[in-house]
Image 1 (spheres, helix red, strand yellow):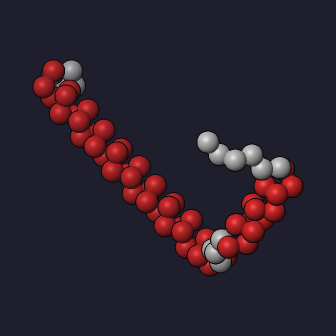
Image 2: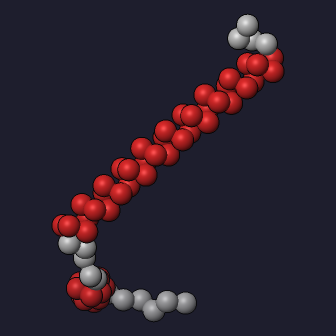
Length: 66
């Protein structure tokens, strides 16, 4: 079972652990954001194309489109 810590000690521990974190630079954050947006765009294009292709195949099989 975890030992009980008073709030003041806990806040000191949190601040000391937060000081150890290596925060990303503005450039790293910008590059990561752009990469995420590009991947979202590519994924949306892929799923749109797959949805259209599957819809077309199903309409051919069920003769709905004719």
